Length: 167
Image (cartoon, rainbow, N blue to C red; front, side):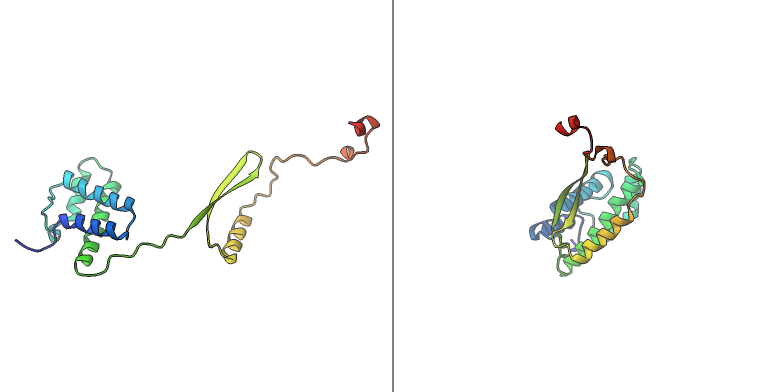
């Protein structure tokens, strides 16, 4: 029996990623789901040698099951990536490093009556980034006035009758 990497080794690779925390759990679950779907819907078996995988044929088999072309291509793309990365890992290359996640803070803002916004900004927002965001927002300004409360007129300035002033 050959020591060539087999389809089941893709699951081993995902387990290694999970144990090291190098990939988010949701990404690992999505990859596992892809591998299982390919096993269920194609002629690939757990013992299929990776070098024998015809990913274009797998994509065609998935499309013939009434999957959208874009969905079948997404499965094929994930499978290609996993095969490539697992081969590199099996060859002794270190597992890929997790993408650095920047800490984000959610900010609520009551813009005007009845209009509340919320947005996320990096916790380490720099003055240059804040300035850039300000310039961006300035470009979005609409010159037409929005229905805002009317300014007090001259007749409302307190020069009214004694009854008005007493009230």
